[in-house]
Length: 448
Image (cartoon, rainbow, N blue to C red; front, top):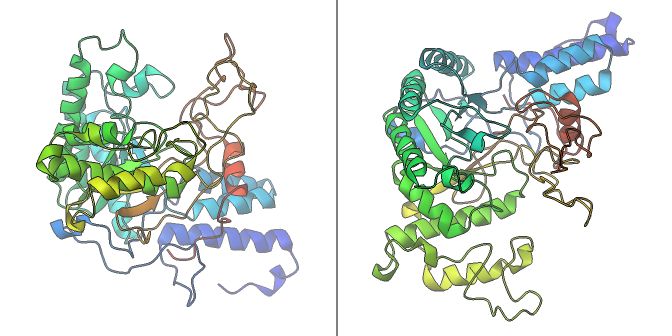
């Protein structure tokens, strides 16, 4: 837009116009793509999403929904009015990029209304929204992100209302982060001694798969944790039992900091393991436990010499797992392999490892990891055959919970010298850190 002559020598007024113009582009979705878009810009497509079942696979040019009134956009306006130009710019850049919208702890009527409202906004923006369904009973083992439906019946009513709200709109749904990686049986010996709660969890997820798949525009991804959690075969087994064959695929790295390349490699192994145990040779039928993983490969010498066994923490050893899959799985038909998406919202600096001996107990490396940065920009053009998209699933700048690094009786997070905000709360300082450490460097998203 033209700059008024009286503003040319007034830095604050000029930046105000620039920032509010940038935020306005997110509101209207009317920006014209530059002739040569920035290297990290999301690909554009001007086609209106359709509701045909053939649209479940994300096209490389998919445009994802940008929330014009999210936390970062509000913070940018707040910082601007305070004349904090540097922070306002950082938050305006963040606000220009698409991210997921999380749903949980509402009544069925409420979630139905909220989902309908979101898909309508996305349609007006000619974009595809990313929604996270997060209401499973016994959510997060009743820890920092505790909550969820009070019973299986309540959950099924909630997810049915969520699904109905989608209608025929094109949408990406990330289904229940951590619900498979953290089954009730994983929460502790006393939580699910008979396995009944875990069986109910799997039944709830299969029900969710059914009602979501009934919506013709929904691309559904069952969450499978991250590459430093479940072994490949365990992840494949749980996905199979939860009905992954009926959905578009699975999601990885939600709210985690594992590097994108490792998530891609792990995801490809999980996909091959699913095929191996369901469509592969007769001797492999049902045996996801045969699959090599990020923790062990029978193809490695395993002779205790450096580099001769697989380590989840040493990616240079992962070629041993590749060797096992090359030997035992080969190259399955591409159209028979399950696809996945990866959360890149804060993995630009990789994982956080505290200095040896700093903490006597669990340092909670997953919880508000310090010094992290935003990773690859959201796109459906990943150049990785099985990776449908890189997405900002975790809301960038929200807390994981009140971490104490397992210090007995402690409430202060020693990494920050203060009590962390509760799970899901907006934390401006965290948002600024993630933007400041972004790799690649965060720019304004001009392709909206």
